[in-house]
Length: 255
Length: 237
Image 1 (cartoon, rainbow over the protein chains, first blue to last red):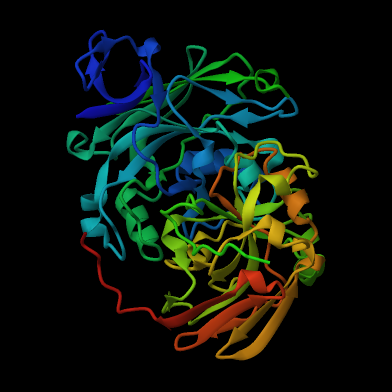
Image 2 (image 1 turned 90 degrees about the horizontal axis):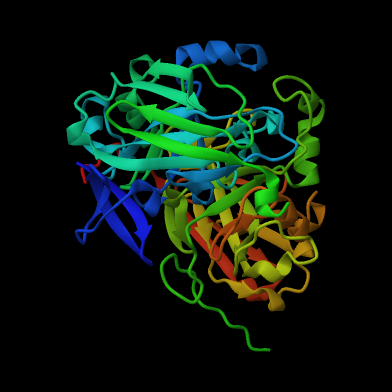
């Protein structure tokens, strides 16, 4: 089952896919553009992975100071960065390299502490698509990637759908891609994660309790390119969703 | 003077904390200076320009008086005493002059970390342990704390004074930090930003009790105790 959370007619609604757009829980069918899309679940702790696809590690290797892959590169984000499908993401005027990252987002469904790999998938409620933007101009080598790069307002896009885990028999065999203005710029497959989902849940739950609604952003493959004001960026994962986002400039924010 | 002293709560008015907590690393000049020449060497290459922030996620949040499990693999926690800035309204691109007006008040925070020497990667395994962000005992309205940038925080372990920190040594004042942080991320009512932990933060191990008190008596006395982590067992919800 796929579900979304949308605003329509002055209220919030749960919605499901329909041939003509979305079907609200109250029976109304409206087009995709008539609703405001929110992140498809109540977002708890946001846990993100850096350098979790071998090809992306290679892509960035020139600017990496340390290449050790002993431990997953994990960082956390706050809820203020999050927006939904068909939202707008701000590119600061002084940025020279701002890129998307298409990622499979794994939503935790049951409390997990010290969970072993063999049982890890029992704690997964489902999946959605994430486009986790970074602005590399602001990178500094202290708790890198620092929050000014990865935790900016509007720069973490989630949606459109929350897809039940039961409907995704193998989350490690999903093709993913990004299109900028209709042109494919990034392609990969979740089969190529360095730390797969059970490994991440075992690792994370070994030092912190994961709770329902927490989400793990599992990293991105290579193919990140600069995006500019006016670009339409679509991050897409087969069977999970097609997440649309548009880049806007400082003027839209009165800056 | 009457001081309104509601107990901290993560789910009840009037001081409804959102559960969103950001910490600030190395705001203390002496803490930065302690890194010395290494700050200009790899992997850092240069001292930080922007505030170095981290997230204390919801599994870390605890009230004063809580018992915290010390991780088996660490043996001890560093007790990072910090002033907690509790936001009272949405703060986006706030000027230094207007910053304090966006706060509901202040609280004491014990930011517990597994001691670590490298600040190159986000140290989630060291900073996000369950119960490792202890708040309280109360949120005190800003009007009662006239000089937040001159407060001293005193840490004791088992009743012995072990460390005194002063906010006067911070590179960024309360107002300056709020201005720089809200330039790129909006903070909302109930969100908390930690001003920073002073150099030489003390450590404690299982079986010990810790407390933080400031020279503003209105903030009260934060307390906590440390126990050994229970035998690691899978949690089946």
